[in-house]
Length: 152
Image (cartoon, rainbow, N blue to C red; front, side):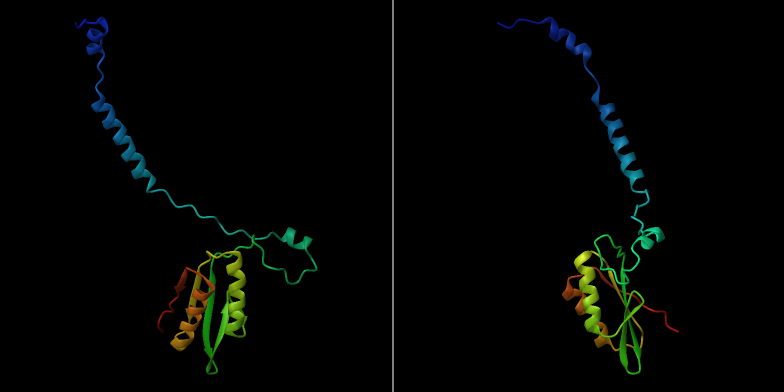
């Protein structure tokens, strides 16, 4: 035997329309996703050691690289002079490719995610550029890019 309840009769009057509420939620979701895509990407600005802290460490001419050192990118230039290649890492001359390897290995030990930019001059034979690229990949750098000079 089925008995009618007073609760069931009141429930039909309390029915909520969920369709318009769901529409509003989806519109808000689309709005926030759409506006979030226009935000500027924030990057961490490279920090510099202040002059005051450098004065406190007087007497250390060559300080070892630390994990706190900034390596936003490494630019390895290859120039052709007197019939042979010359190397520089971040505008610091390096006598041979073996020394470039030592510098890049030290940086990789501190920051393996640092991008390496290979910047050869137009006169440099392609074999030397490939040797440098192979060296960076052998060390383990994953972000190796090439810089191109404008033709004169």
